[in-house]
Image (cartoon, rainbow, N blue to C red):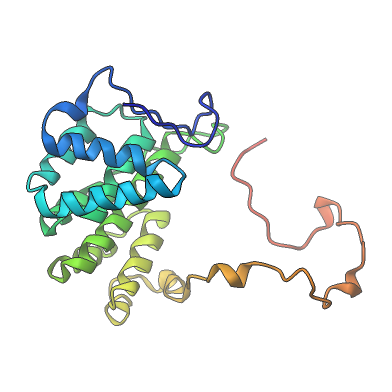
Length: 236
């Protein structure tokens, strides 16, 4: 069984699930999860439909889904971010209420220390990706099983590092807990409550708009004179 993303096979963000170690052959549920990973990372309509069918089967028949995902996550290499991310994604779509503790624990996993000059894809960045996926998966599970919704409040109350905290607050707000959050956050973090998710249409400039003509073709200012906000993730 093999499936790569639409990036070139040699790229660092390509995902390949191969049958060499055959971890997905341990049980029927593990096989379904493997198929879910395969089709989740296929960028076509057929793959999308197959993924949704697999989620339906896991919801109805995957009584051991949590144990299977837990075991597969432990078998995965620590740096295999794409596979671990995919397993959490599937658990979010198909998991039951019993997945809440595992997802909460994953979201609160201690992040590695930042290493200077390591670029934008070091171990810390990888673990932030995994932790935030755990939060989104927990939000999905809580949407189907409201009895575990307060697990997101637990994550906020633990005050994890800011990237994780921001995602947990956004997820808790989406589930209707905005009024409870101010008491769980220090005052200097209350700005997080005002973050909103913009629709894609709001971020796309209209090609026919005419309100930018006054700028003409003025070249950008040299970096030293620029007053616009900027973000740099890599040290030079």
